[in-house]
Image 1 (cartoon, rainbow, N blue to C red):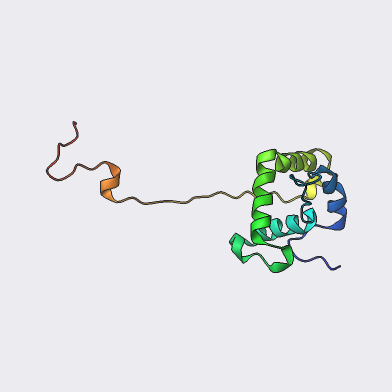
Image 2 (image 1 turned 30 degrees about the vertical axis):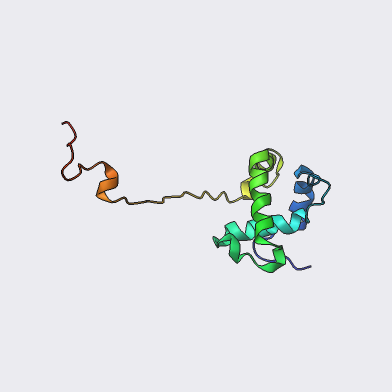
Length: 123
């Protein structure tokens, strides 16, 4: 199988697989972790919306819910800690930081401006 851009290598997968949860709850088997992880990596590598996830990674909802579940249960923290602690290639890792600088502008009335005919704010 040829590895595509944003997908995890076989060598990295061997180290990461034991750190992932073993099975889903309520008797159901989870879809393959590697496929889902590759979908998550593709999403964040491209910056595309979840709904634009290619079909080869399965349902975008499955990838999204697995991502958020792993975020809540500490799986991502364990993976990061493992990479930072045990990877012999730490110096070769390019650390990318995403910063959200969203700005939402509000109308003047939403900012506490005095209303016409109403009491004005004390100065």
